[in-house]
Image 1 (cartoon, rainbow, N blue to C red):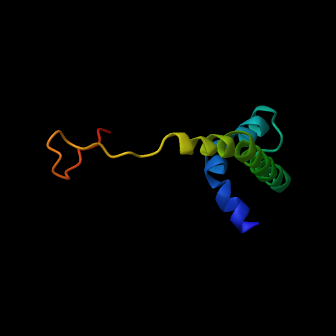
Image 2 (image 1 turned 180 degrees about the vertical axis):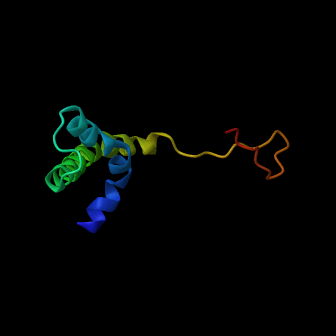
Length: 84
């Protein structure tokens, strides 16, 4: 459970606000314990879905974008700085 939470942690960080905003918009007991638990559970489900439907497939594309250092025109073993 902890490892899976670590894997989906970025999605959890980005998406946790959606269920809580929905609860607030629907006036579903903003400060109640059941509303908190439902919000956390829905956040976890959304982050898990985001991992499997978006993040994991996109991470597979990394192999097409390999790092290849660019030599300077001198050919003296120096590498050109990478612009950020």
